[in-house]
Length: 201
Image 1 (cartoon, rainbow, N blue to C red):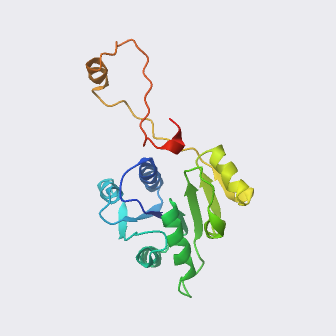
Image 2 (cartoon, rainbow, N blue to C red):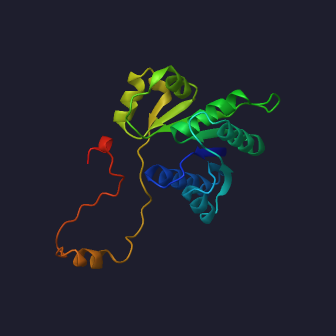
């Protein structure tokens, strides 16, 4: 399958890590992958380092014409069967790009959106963008309930929990705990996340 992934973030947070893990995992399983992401952003450099094909894009706000053009260009040259839109700005660009799709390019690809936050969908335009997708992936049941409460058809919503591949722990953990004065037999619970109010740490 040919899949175009689209992410608009310039920086690096959990969402971008999941985009990279998803794209790499799909490539490892034999799918053709193209990642359209913020030109000069962290995801672009990490994706290139991971051996992924990248289409640098220009994202500046929710309805930026340059973003729509960047996604449209990647879409036209790559010919995806699925366009996976990983954040609200990517969803805006992908939805508008689907409306300016030239005739004679065969069957339109399926749009898939991922929703990682539990905010309500603000206004009819936001709901329309998500309704334009064949599927919307919610990363938790709570987010799925918000989407369904805001009018999305439950048959289009799928819950897919995010995670990371099994891997051995990095070296240096014991020394770091010792430097903090934590006895080696103590249980340790860690949380690596952006400390934002809505996450309610």
